[in-house]
Length: 330
Ligand code: ADP
Ligand code: MG
Image (cartoon, rainbow, N blue to C red; front, side, top):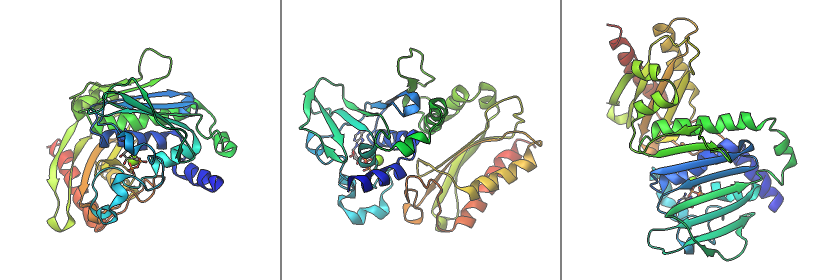
């Protein structure tokens, strides 16, 4: 059964950047205002995420890595309406099947922290008291140590690190209230560092370029036809970004970083009207869709999302973005 679970886990945690996405969403779920990611060898040797969120109760530690055993899944009827990031209860379980997983956590009410190690879904021994700050530190070492095939798929740690940095960058743009750090273990200088209480625009300037930030056009919060149960906001740019700048397409639906080839295509088509050929567009779009009408958590590896009234929502979104782009050209 462990082998089956290990294979399933490697499907869910396809690469280090998937694990990071799940872990940082847990940290955001816990109300953290500081999230620090530390990585060794592109996350294959070490992936660590330290937050200052509400922590995990000691009594929840034994079942933490049991699939579907999380508090949020307990009431199955809640599933439909759940608007927070995670509800599958599979991320930590999966990570425990494909790495050495250690959790150090302390709630505000606790006077000491607790340290727990997991293998293949189970707590290895009783959690031990340890000195800790309020919050949670999750450390996954030797990712895919038990899956040689998966491990061989990764050529270079630097490519995986770039993917991790990209995920953290996008979440930092979307969650500017949090102080974010992303760094390689053993280096003094972080590759990404933001201040708590920043703004999306300021973080775009910091993490992409200042000149991009100065050209950004706001897509003001816009509610689409009420029956669609959707609204959008964001920042876009219609400037010609040929000067070696990183292009960007950041799409969040209900606060989860997702892909939607429909939305991407529609926005790209719009940009060909508003941008010179060969220019690299930038768009950060945050959509809220009635959770009953979207399933952003179909499967962790399937970040491609679909939702009800998709064509109408995409049309309304394109019209909204076009208004922002066109407004600047008048
Ligand atoms: P899910 O997020 O889908 O419930 P996970 O496996 O990602 O499942 O996490 C399991 C549970 O562990 C979460 O529901 C949450 O209660 C707890 N948890 C995980 N990470 C953290 C964290 N950083 N801070 C506080 N609680 C956490
Ligand atoms: Mg989760």
